[in-house]
Length: 109
Image 1: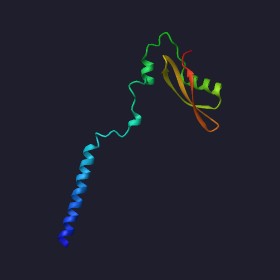
Image 2: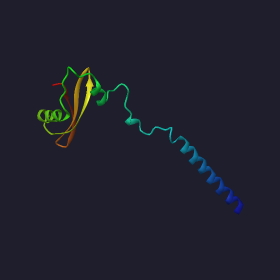
Image 3: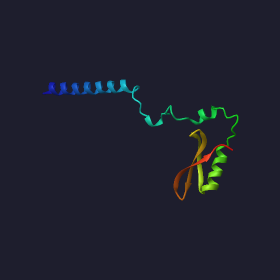
Image 4: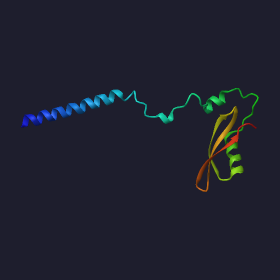
């Protein structure tokens, strides 16, 4: 009976060891953050900023936040530059009466 228990114990340990080795070998190949990828179709703020804007003057994030507060009320939390249909906008995150909303403010002066 003792030998049987020792054999079962050894088999159980070896099974868990194999599982641990298998899991660690896949650790570097599994992508755990699919939500944080940047799609190649979408433009980032850095890519937009690198475009030739010599003929277009842009407002700053602070000005976009102030314009959003003046137009919609509430408080502006953040502003991100983005492009839609060939035009530049700031997407401003607003909070008003406990609700979070997003508004678009044209980035061109």
